[in-house]
Amino acid sequence: MNFKIAVIKGDGIGPEIVDEAIKVLNKVGEKYYHNFEFTELLAGGIAIDKTGHNLPEETLEACKKSNAVILGAVGGPKWDSLPGNDRPEKALLGLRKELNLYSNIRPAMMFDVLKDACPLKPELVKGGLDIVIVRELTGGIYFGKKFTKNDYACDYMEYSKYEIERIAHQAFKIAEARNKHVTSVDKANVLETSRLWRKTVAEVSKSYPNVKLDNLYVDNAAMQLVINPKQFDVIVTENMFGDILSDEASMITGSIGMLPSASLGDNNFGMYEPIHGSAPDIAGQGKANPIATILSIAMMLKYTLSLHKEAESIENAVKRALEQGARTADIRKYEEKIITTEEMGNIIAGNIE
Ligand code: IPM
Ligand code: MG
Image (cartoon, rainbow, N blue to C red; front, side):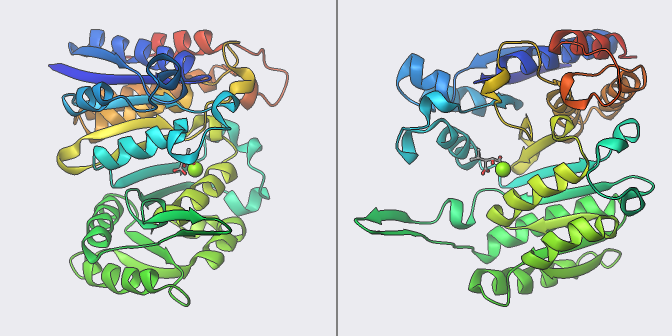
């Protein structure tokens, strides 16, 4: 089959890691007879430098005409002094909003061979960790009315029932295919939006009688993640809580450089990117770990293109590379030889079966 993929490499380590991901995807195409047609587009700091805008109209239009979008990372110190709306990060928010990517799926799984990197006591994560965070991505305080007037600033947090319903359905559907447990996280003891959230999630849960629903306040959830992470299967939460909890969850797996994400809209359209940022301090040096981006490609094959065998071939190729001892600096623990971004990509591409 033929697929059109929009590619936004972005800033910092973005270009290096995306190149390796594309290498792996092309290998999958070769082995399974698919053709991936790539369109390279600008967004973030590099777009500011080249066009004066963080998210050029042309980028948005080309994304809309594609089957899926692959994104590296945006941002860096060079653009840190720009006002909020002009920053590279705003391009990411614009892509999410304009492409209606309301559902952000962030798996936090522990790789068996890397389990020593987990900062928690081994008995807390015995048998591994496998949590999926489903974060609402186009609402809440990120997108409410905001302004600053002299010594006053405000950010409105808003949610409609419809926005909560669609993300709740997504979470329950994912849980149905897993361990059938959804934990909804809110702050319903304080926030009106959270009270609507809790009520709406309870209503949606009635359509999924096989899935157990629990509710936790966000402060408690943050604590539970470090004292008893194995109680979680799928966590569903609003935009900002999801931002914070997904960093926490990814770090307890010990491998933030390894974790992928999908941002989905309707009709399986999606944007795929690693959870980590643009890491400007190591950009261009071949030190970055491309695995999070490569695994994001596997998510793209699964969620948008429905190529499940192909997705599995990538996951297996990554697992095998790790078992073979392939280590970029971020995941090296013992005296393993440190390899470059490109070498990691080559090993994983070579493992595609
Ligand atoms: C993330 C990031 C973004 C967010 C930033 C870069 C705007 O932290 O994807 O988690 O807050 O959503
Ligand atoms: Mg974040």
